[in-house]
Image 1 (cartoon, rainbow, N blue to C red):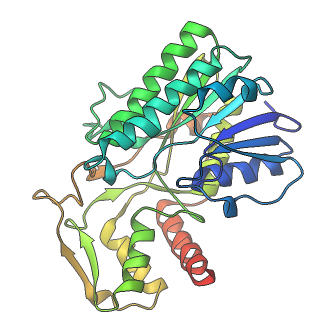
Image 2 (spheres, helix red, strand yellow):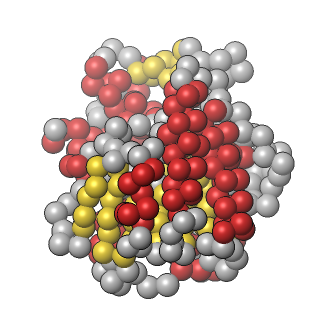
Length: 320
């Protein structure tokens, strides 16, 4: 698949991952339309471009979707509620923003001429697997957060709709995606904690949470690679890195970036077993051999991605 002159719809295209995807698609010569309700996204993430159109709307406005979808063959479904932690106190957010919105989109797609749907899922659908690195074939899947459960539900809906109505689906399970324009996650949290409190940097849990990270530019390259190399009616791909980084190491990198004394790092709160919050996964590393066998490799390791992101986000905050 080539993207030159392709007409592509991106849901959630004004958000962190979505806007970086839009940038890359435009660079590839695609004509892109973004749908976003701007609840977590921002128009400032989108650059003026002759091949870019923006439509402010919520996917619950299902009556508007058929008229919009009629002009496209490819949909990147990136729209989602991005924060794992809020799923404990507000499980309805994961349901509404992830499951319900995906259902509304699928209902419109099955009545359209859409040929391909690419869905951004998450490593959290695996829960806490017995096999690490974890391959796409691992199962059964038992998510431990409402966010993870909602993403897995979306995967199930997409698979069923693809098999029932004949369009193709690509499910992408991300490691922790980090980089420019990110406004949530551990690095963003640490930077803002230091800016608000110069006396201490609090880590929730024991700091040993150890996970794989991928820079958003590598993630976007992998997304397009998967779209071009899918073979089945429904394909699932892990996107991540071979190495992992623990939270204490990330905290130290943030401290070094901001010239903050790392001796002021403290451990507090969290759960009795060392998690930062209920639903926090202690160890995550995805097996990406399926993608690598097809010829894709990331440019940055997890550790380098963390270092790059610290500088990117610190500069962005300073420019606000």
